[in-house]
Length: 242
Image 1 (tube, rainbow, N blue to C red):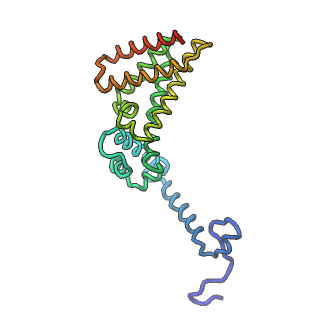
Image 2: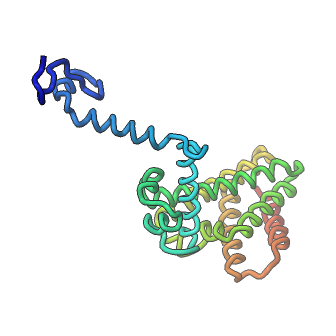
Image 3: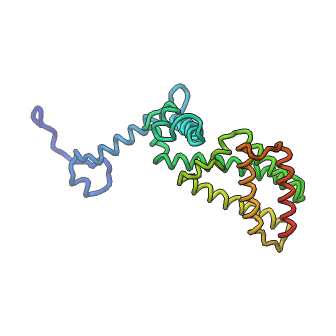
């Protein structure tokens, strides 16, 4: 029997169940309580409310943060900061850090998402085009240009000079340029088995970036169809020299 107000003496359990070292810490071990609380919080966050699962709510919050980050990184709205993104998304900082380690991690996710969208659409157009160089180049360039024209934020992320001064964006631009060079070189090899297209691919990708920057800035006055046609001419002409 135990007296009133006294805890029963008995076996002590470490809540985390991780071994003898935790048993020696006693039944009041805070590490075990923390883990138990974490599980309870996670369980609550994954419950179904209004027919929406916790995972769906979390995915929705991530999409809201990405959309807000896209706007602010591209210069549409306020400052690109954790506070600014949360305000734009209508979420608290807790939900920001649920998805991203910091502002740079969000910038990388936004930029990579834009590049992936462009690459996927461009390659789909190239694959669907007739099996000749001009048709494939023209199809790829048409999709690339229309993708940038349809959403000016894409053009800013890829080419705006002020964003190029941001270290994380500058690094991603270099990496995405390398990716486009590899893709173009791979397409060239599909038509010329003995081709060494690396120099030509560097020249064409770099030159295209300059042309698109001038076009988006209004320094190059030319219709979209003429732009695609002329760039296709240059790509095909250089391809013959590879």
